[in-house]
Image (cartoon, rainbow, N blue to C red; front, side, top):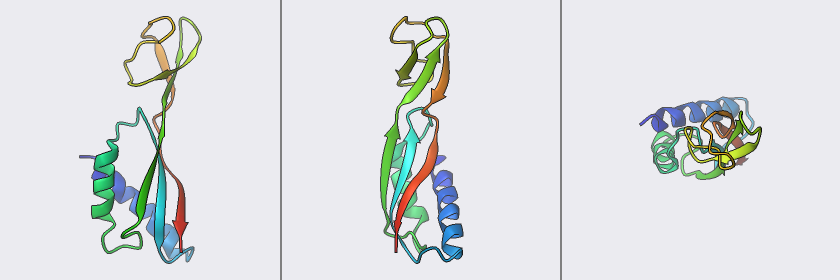
Length: 113
């Protein structure tokens, strides 16, 4: 379950900002997660609750903004939405796709006190 280590990295970013005196507590955290990022949102939610216990983010609500997978099809030149890395182009059914989006996992914003 690599989601737990991802949550630890997210908490490190939050704590670094907290040390800079930017806020005293996190109320809500919005994360962007791409469909091709290989992250299970439910496991991430569970890991976030576990990792943030006793921290400045304890009890914070985690909101996930899902981003679609995107790819460029080499044969037909279309920019297409894909559900998985090995999906076929929905226009020409080719598997020669170059992923262009949907791999991200990043903090979008935080509501803090």
